[in-house]
Amino acid sequence: MIKKTAIIIGASSDIGLETAKHMAQEGFNLALTYNSNQVDFEKEIENKKNIEIKSYKLDLCQPTQIKKVFEEMESDFKYWDTLVFCSGVAQKRQLIFDVSDEEIDNLFEVNIKSAIRCIREFTKRTINKNPAGIVLIGSFVNKNGCSCESVYTATKSGLSGLCKSLASELGNLDVRINVVAPGFIDTKMNNNLSQEEKDEFCEITPLKRLGTTDDIANAVAFLSSDKASFITGQTLYVDGGLVLE
Image (cartoon, rainbow, N blue to C red; front, side, top):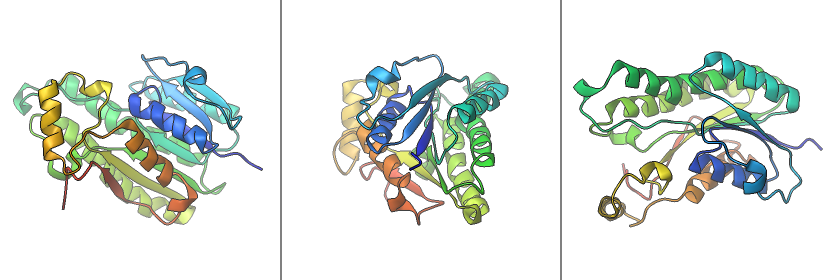
């Protein structure tokens, strides 16, 4: 029996690592990337299903590295069926006229251009071989925008547009793609906020709490499973009702 394999880009992030743990519980082999934040994945992930875990250093700002790492993963794993793109950088809160060209370039490079490159490398190796699924980690800001984080919002919103287009483009090739859009999640990225600010987010969230990495990983695991075999082109908001229609 062929064991499923998930590639998780940005697996050393809080959401990425929790997703890796959930996918391991589902019996997926794991190909995990990290950049500056190296993690001992073998130690962090309970390997009760005797899965294969390999890690790769990847700087998403270096396009040639993306191709090289996918070639390495192809050599290590002969069968892939899942790509999860968890990487992303936040924008320093500021008005648009204070945003530098360097920050604009970095946000687009990491948040969306590298996602496109990873999808390109993944799909060229999976189409016509086996059913495949892609999950991108977006953001609730896609729905209503976010003042003083306009460039970040543009990049995350772009993932939903990319998802819709690729769902149509790749559907007849048996490739599904969806976006999980987290609300306010209690991660290290948000540790710069005071407790008072976190309490304010809880207050405006209908479920009256912050989200957890477990909430997001559960959604990713579902969309990557056979239970979601008829779901594609969707953005799933996992936000406690923070963004309502």
